[in-house]
Length: 363
Image 1 (cartoon, one colour):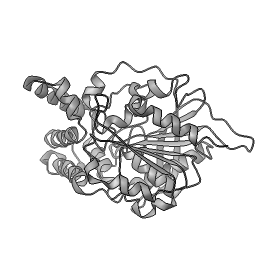
Image 2 (cartoon, rainbow, N blue to C red):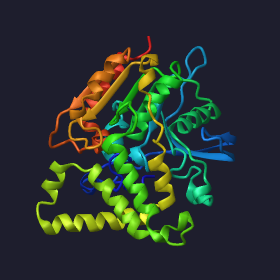
Image 3 (tube, rainbow, N blue to C red):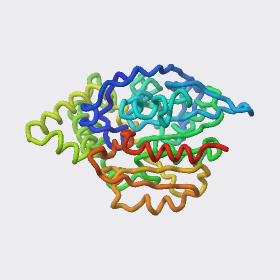
């Protein structure tokens, strides 16, 4: 089940702050089922291809078909950058939503949790190709997810809920396959080109790795630790919650210990080439031109303490007006919000999701 607390993954990555992970009880032993599909001769948007693209996923619950034979209870949950199929089994998400009577009760819904390209047990650079792995992007991820669902014989989705990178993929799903889902819930992102401070952070993290002499153009035998430490420190700051950090690390000694513990865990769990690829996968993301093409109702939630998507930009309030059935909610900073990682703290926003699910129930 959920063996890794992905709390080192902040910001644009699947991100909970270390504080959240440290305070969370062990996860439930959810009865997940493993699955893998192999997409033959998969062609990437870059023009590259793989003879076999492996996509791993987990499921919970059982698919149900309506009178017309179509699946009507499938929910696709999309993780953030650097996460995997286990990410949303984090107890502050799953223990709130998947339980009997919960908004995403697994007795009612068929939950699908994929490992995206480059992540988890799906095909990734660290499998052997290293920097010769195709330069995948979010469009490749969305298209491969759609192909995966075809092989799973899932022909319709009740909901797509995505966090961070999954949030961005959610907007792309709505534009690329507008009739495939009943509802979209993108949490913690903006539907615009990754630029400004967001891209600067990604670029700095990538360059920190590439400029480490031990990286050796991706042909290292041991991880380039100086570059990786720098990259992970950037991500820590971007994904952090100042309120929570000040609360739980109120002294210099605790703050410094937090950083050292974080870096140690992060470095042990991260492959440098994988990080370069998944940070750069957003390089050509920009769904802004086609927002009007989204047919499904959209529940879009960001939090006011999200350093990645700061509310002062005013972008969301403008963009949501172009989504035909869009609703944007900006969560105020409270003792329950967790910066960018609020996207996984389901207790903060579950009531909005419950109302949304009720409102979008197919007639």
